Structure formats: structure tokens, C-alpha cells
Image 1 (cartoon, one colour):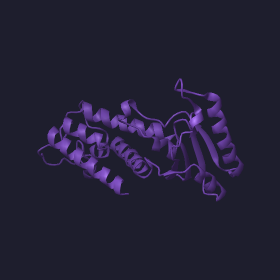
Image 2 (cartoon, rainbow, N blue to C red):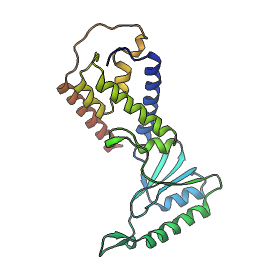
Image 3 (cartoon, rainbow, N blue to C red):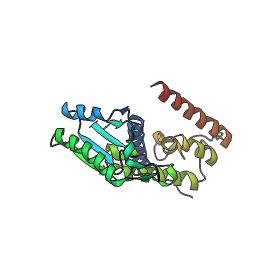
Image 4 (spheres, rainbow, N blue to C red):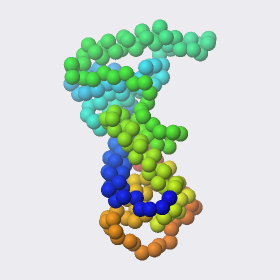
Length: 229
């Protein structure tokens, strides 16, 4: 792929990816709490939105929000009567009864302003799980396809262009798996802070091996931070 990426396009792409990174960092894995705490939060007026999957509590999630970037998720506690233990099949009547009873309690204590939403899945995500995050839709529904499209575009640019300056394609591939799309748009093929016409000096690019090690280090560090938080 030849020709420079328009500077304005890179700026917009960077802004979307930066925002999506913040959303994922803050809200990718909401803290798990007992479902009964949702009732308490509703009574206290601390809930703005409740989102439940169609098959919860058999599986799926129940989440609730106290603000755009403040979400909680019900701890999974599967009732024993929603599955037929002889056939291992879901019992629709039992599931409907369990879900209906809990949602009736939710609606009874929820303020009129609280939005109660049925989710058909875990959120808008891209192919293969490489792009997209349920956190996008939790933050703001229309943002999910925009953020995922930005990720897909960054992947396409990385895979099809040959003018990488800081790292080779394989290095960027591994770094993308560790969330490197934001860094790619910021740096390639020239750093955004140099403006649309600045040309930095040539430099030795990271190869695939060093890119893999760097990505592995980043993922290990993020895992340690999550484990300690």
C-alpha cells in the first residue's frame, strides 16, 4: 500500500483509539459483586443502568452502572433448577421464572430514570476476538462499532503498508496483540507530533523477535497490575 495516510485521518483514528483504550482500561472487567447488591444500590439511588443477558442467570452476565465508567457485574451463581441434569439442557420455564422474579424486584425499587436493558450478547466485537470489547457498548452503545471499526482500520493499515519506520510488520503484529494499535497510529509512518510534513531520520526497525518479546513483557506487566489491583 502506497501513499501517506492523511494527517487528519490519523488524528481522528488516534482520538478514537485513545478513548477506546481509556474505556477498556477502566471498564473491561467490572468488579464482581453479589447480585443482591444491585438491589441495595438501586434503593440508594446509585444506579443509572442495568443490563442483563437473555439467558442470565443460567449463563451470561448481569451488569449495572453508577456512571459511564463505573460498572459492576453480578458474581456468577448458577441456580440448580435452570438446567435439566439428565439431559444437560436449559429449562426455559425455570430460567424465565428465576429471571422474572429477580427483575421484578429490580423494577420495584428502580427509579423511573433507571434504564433496564436486555442484551443479546456480551457486546459488539470484531472477528476472532482480536478487536472489540464489551466495555465499548457498556460505556455508550453507538461507540462500540466506531471503536471496533477504528481497530480494524489500524490492523489493515499495519498489515498492508510497507513503509513502517519503527518496527517491521511482524513486530507490529505481536505488539497489536498487546494493544499496540494506538502506538502504531501515533508513530507510523512518521510521528504525529512532527506534523504532516516532518520526516524523521532513518532508524533501525524492531524485528519480529524483539516485537514479540516487547509484547510479551507488556502483557506480563499488565497481568501483574491486574493481579495486584
